[in-house]
Amino acid sequence: MILDLTLTKLQELGLTEVAAVLEGRAEQAAKSELSYIEFLNELLTEEVLARQERSLRTRTRLARIPSPKYLADFDFEAQPGADRKVINELATLTFIDRMSNICFLGPPGVGKTHLALGLVMRALEEGYTAYFTTLDQMIADLRRAEINHNLPKRLRVYLKPKVLLVDEMGYLPLDRAGANLLFQLVSRRYEQGSIILTSNKSYGDWASFLGDPVLAAAILDRLLHHSVTVNIRGESYRLRNRRKAGVLTAPVAKEVVPAQ
Ligand code: ADP
Ligand code: MG
Image (cartoon, rainbow, N blue to C red; front, side, top):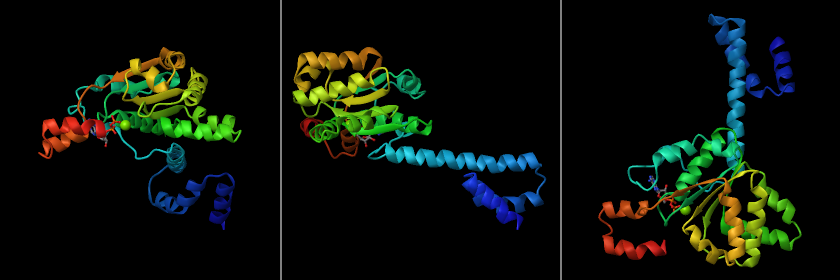
C-alpha cells in the first residue's frame, strides 16, 4: 500500500515526525484547501519543531541543571541591586559568540544563581550547549581524574560546552593543587568559550580563597579580560519574603545571613 511504502521511506530518511503525523495530516489535507506545497511545508515544519524540541531536551539533560530558573520569573522590583537593563542586554547572548565571561558577585540569596541559570536556559533555548557545576564539584572531579590519569578527558567535559556555569566560587577555600586545576580550566577556556560564575567574594578576596596571590592574579586576569561583572548588593530574597510574612524581624535576619 502506498502509505506503507511512504512511511518506510520516511523512516529511512530519518523523518520520524513526518512519519508519525502523515496519515492524519493527509486525511485533513484531503478535506481542506491546502496546496501541495502548503501540505509539504506543514509536514516539514512538524519535523523541524520536533527536532528542535528533542535537541533542547538533550542539551538540557547534558547541562546537568539542578533546577531550571527563568529570567521571566526574576522579580527586578524586589532586587534593585540587579539592573534589568544589564540583564536584558546579557540575555541577547552576544557574550557567547564573543566568548566573554559573566561574573555575578554578591552576598547569599540575592539571586546570583537564579540569574546565571536564567541565562543558561536562554542559551539552551537558542541552541547552545551548556554545563552547570559548582566550583567544589568541578575541582573534586578534576582531582579524581588527575589521580586516575584521566585529566585531559575529564577536562573536556568543562571545555566543550559553549557556556560553563561555575556556581558558588569562594564558599570553600581551595588548596594550591585545586587552584592550579582552576587555572588550567580558566586559561584553556580563555577566548574559547564563555564562563558564567557566581561568587560571594569580591575580587579583592579571591587571593585568600584561592590560597595563592600569583595564581589568583593569573586566574582573574584571564577571567576578567573579556567580561561583565554584575555586582548585586541587596538583601536575601528568601529572608525578604520571610520578613514580609512577619516570620523574621530585622535583627534576627542579620544573624541568619551568614548561616545560609
Ligand atoms: P544566590 O545564588 O545569590 O545565593 P539564589 O539565586 O539561589 O541566590 O536565590 C535564592 C532563591 O530566591 C532562589 O530560589 C531564587 O529563585 C529566589 N530569588 C532570588 N532573588 C529573586 C528575585 N529577585 N525574584 C525572584 N526570585 C528570586
Ligand atoms: Mg547561589
